[in-house]
Length: 268
Image (tube, rainbow, N blue to C red; front, side, top):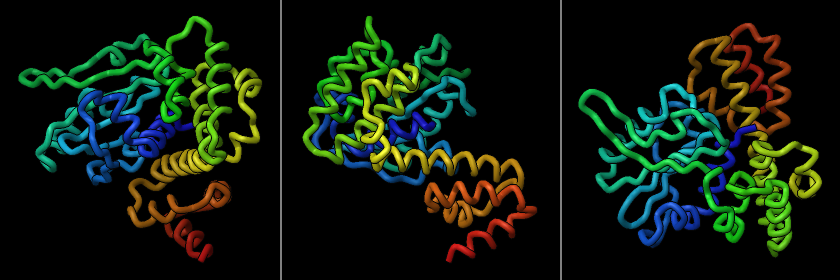
């Protein structure tokens, strides 16, 4: 399950709330900045850029501290490209979702022989749960925050979800919460507190499933056939979850990229 991508989904669904959390006293109007900074369609799924009247907020979500290239170097790379393209102040925040003792989760700068670049790091397991419990936009992240009683925290999260008046929003928040809670809790415990039928009906939940299917197939495709034309990748990205599952089965019989294109053409 793509925890990083779910967090990105939330940040872009509630940009003002995330900006208020990460840029206290500095935000006015906030918009999601759609920018072509990454040539990696997988890595870009985890990055959110929010633009205020005076700066850009770059948010990167991480489940695991290990990545290629390493997180500090990647943050520096984004900073340089954002600064060159927009020439405005840039605040960068790396948010670690799953508790880790890896030094990267406690690193807040890129250091080289003559280069030093600092950024902010938030480790959710150190954050006070109250802020997250009292804000629907941040509520799905609450199960990952600091607590002496994880089960009691999950119970409180479920109670707060139930209080959300709008049905669609309640379903989406529940779906995201179920995904994040999986980083900390057993599935049976999650289902004691969160109604599975609400989670499964969540639009966000279904979209995350689709993205997870795409990323898995994308990796398999690259491993088997090497670099693929971006136009073909985009056609695959637009497939539904059911179509991606069918493609995964058909892929076993493909001997070339042309077989993939022929399969896509059959969809009309």
